[in-house]
Image (cartoon, rainbow, N blue to C red; front, side, top):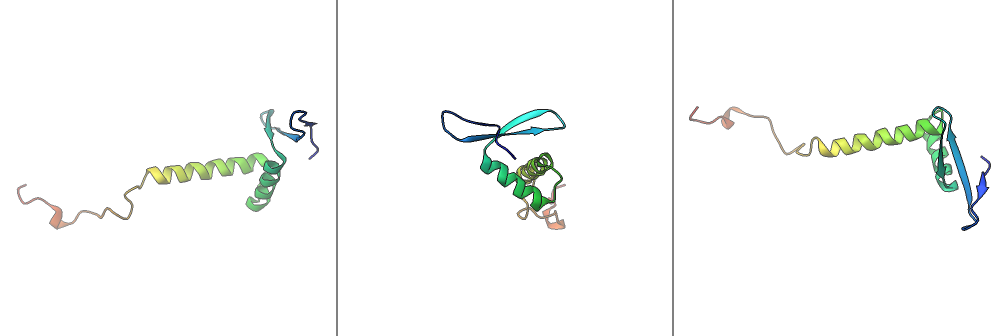
Amino acid sequence: MEPNRINRSTGRIVYWYTLAASDTTVKISRNTLSELERLRDEFSAKSIDETVRVLIRDRRRKLLAGVFGSDKGRVTSFSEEDRGEDR
């Protein structure tokens, strides 16, 4: 991917990645682009967009797993001994 411009204040090359489906431009660094391309190959994704969606989905899944099931492994099912005598 060719750089779109050089940031004059920092001298760094700025890459612009345009998502074709929604025509939205996202500004990312060269290192981030390289990492996303590596992850795209690792995930066998068809595009950078699909790679980002996989990362978001995994992050949501981890957050939900932390919220739901916080007592997992500490709570057992009720048994006959758990019933109160004065019912």
